[in-house]
Length: 328
Image (cartoon, rainbow, N blue to C red; front, top):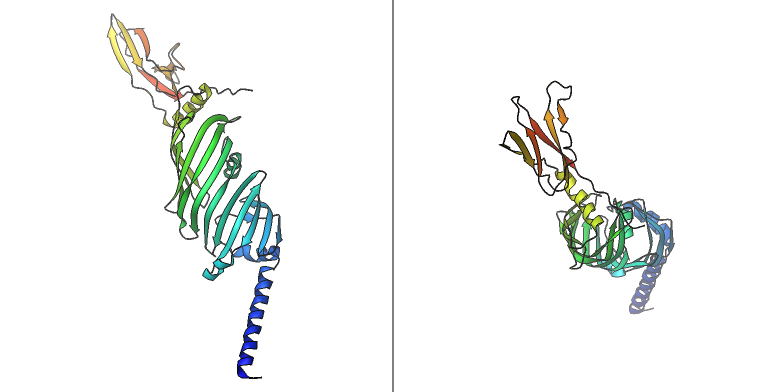
């Protein structure tokens, strides 16, 4: 055997060995591979599966739970080109009932990057996943070109849009609200969502929401009931928006014809009690007869006879709750 022939045989053997090893890797059972990999992935959420089937190359995870919430199943197909950059590349499809979202995912040991995230899901799933204190209705449509997370920096890059069509929210059942749009961006390690409502929405909304991968989120929204909106919506908005900012109104007093008139205007979302000081009583501040649970929008006037004795008055303000009654 000549030297060139030996080199060709050795090259062919090396190629066959490489193909054989690659086939072993790609055809390796997915459930065994997942058990080996999941402990090494530093993801921002806890992921548990009921079962994993198929091969590393292509398979399915069923009964998927994220941070304890049931989220459906995921189908994947490996993208070998990502391995050249030291990452695990996957083409993913999430399914649950009639909902579906497709995405491309790149996983490193301390990072994750999602691209081409497109699909739709029922809005009620968001309520369940994030433990929101109200019921949601409608359909969410996603179109996210990219979202990137790292273990050290949180959400470092994000871009895309969400649409909430036929939106509804409330308790004990959702009220119809309209249509809402959201633009995604990254902000100091958090996912920033800029929210805006459609022109025909009964509840106008404008503002921001922020989600931190460690599980915290906050919402800064300006909400307004549109003209002609359901009175239950306006009442619910009144209670939600004004409870944290209860302030007692300013008092004014005038005298005429031997009488004292005290005037004040209860602020929106509040009710007021007029109190008079009685120093001889164990609890010296007592309600003035008939002057309690007073509400706006107009001013309140209380008139009493002037006497030689001095008297002190004050107003106490409380949140004013309006009952919300939804159709049966």
